[in-house]
Amino acid sequence: MRALSRVQRVLAGAAATGLLAGGAAVGMAGTASAAAPTSSPAVVAGQHDHGGHHWVKGHWEKKWVKGHWEKKWDHRSWHDGWSDHWGHWHHGYWENHYTWVYVPGHWDWYWTNGYWD
Image 1 (spheres, rainbow, N blue to C red):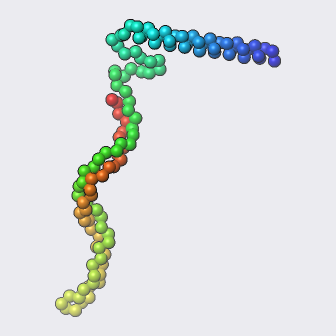
Image 2 (tube, helix red, strand yellow):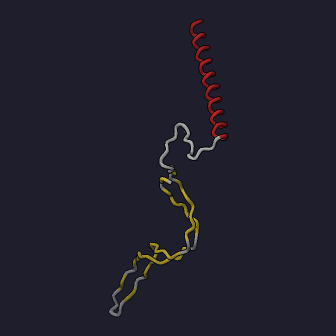
């Protein structure tokens, strides 16, 4: 039991020392970079330099769509039955067809794929 608490204390001390040393190194790096400006940008640890490019994730984007004419499917056109000049009856029927409808300008959401910028 006593050995376990010693190991825990040693590990806690090592972690604290590492955090203090890391914080001091970051602080010194910040003051050193502020004191002496460099011509090339500094690369943060863990990031990769892709020649000045970075990845922009895919996202939804709101864009304005101007007013336009659009062909819409009209499935509610009923034609009444009629009699021709020989006296034959022709039954009524539904006619499905396209009609042109004007759509006024509006905002619409479009998906933009991810890309390298």
